[in-house]
Length: 287
Image (cartoon, rainbow, N blue to C red; front, side, top):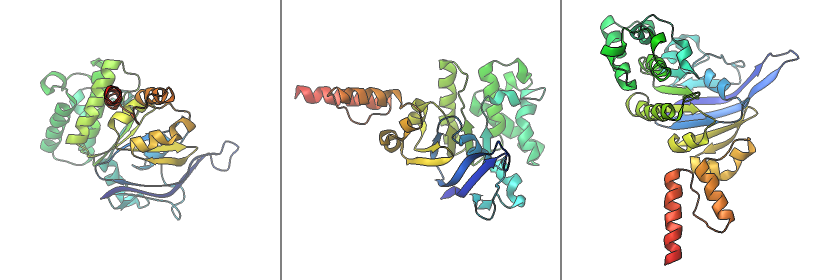
């Protein structure tokens, strides 16, 4: 079942001025329920402009030619806009900068309250969201979000998005600025969110190792156009990633270098595949 359908989407910043910039150029995509889509490309490729269209933060410029449909609701129709913004949860880069209430619970409750839910339902959603992101309700609910650690702030901000129980979750560089331990914690949380909250996830990232590990599909943007779309293995062996100026995942680079030296272990893109490929090659040599 398709949850996102984009047809012929183009977008130009500063139209009809000397600073006119085409950010998206005739993009058409369909995203199915349950997919984990990695959206990659160099800075300026159109990633942020694309994802901000998906919950109406950026409006369609040419409604006669372009269209976006979320769960059957057209974003060209204003009556669906509010519902779509609840259905498509957006976690921006450094989401902790968007915390504003005087307690963690109030901050997480902001979205559910705007959904006009009962107080009981709002409270239940706050508790559930905090549980999912690993913030103990009794410990953190009445604390100021500004007194939390960096990782706790990010979890609180993510809880505020998932408390609306979005059907589609969009993550823009979710581990930006975190140390290795914090990165691993958030990436593990992302996998949990897909299992327990939103089956369909779109993640923008410059880190190809993260994308190789998590994504079931990769969409590559360059100069506002889709230049590759497929499984991680298909995309990484196509050469399109290098054409955008991004690096292959570390495992893929090692496998490529080994192959160039006559030690072919196959098309590994993750550490587990790399180890398995080396083991197979070593065993074959001993046969």
